Image 1 (cartoon, rainbow, N blue to C red):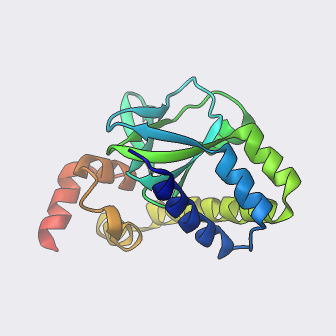
Image 2: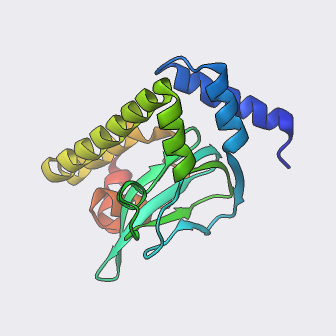
Length: 197
């Protein structure tokens, strides 16, 4: 059960992380604490499925989330989000339109959510939060571009080495088929690469 102490401890960690980008006024800290929703979600459950419109941004306290979509019935993994990460379906959330993406829990997880309207209100009311939002969005975009780059230009073994460098904290928490899907290779190819390491 989430106690007030645990929540405050977690929020303090998130505030420290955000303040590494930009100092937060006490008024903003209070706004975020008062408007968050606590979500305890089970492994296998979905935060979002195709056709739904993403209306919340999530912060992961504990757990793991996978993003993916279907292409001719085949799952194509778009990313993994772990403790301390934001979870969002950008196209659906920022364009306020139905998603083509699934966001699924790979583990029992505890998350905190902020609705789109409240997030945009925070952007309007607090200049520092607007800047934080811009920097976080830039980081998301840079990661997406880097992934596109190495997906196109690297061998299967190089892709796996890059994955190990970027996702070392979750390598033993993600099924091999999801990693292979993320890298754009078959599970059999990934198994051979891992056996050689």
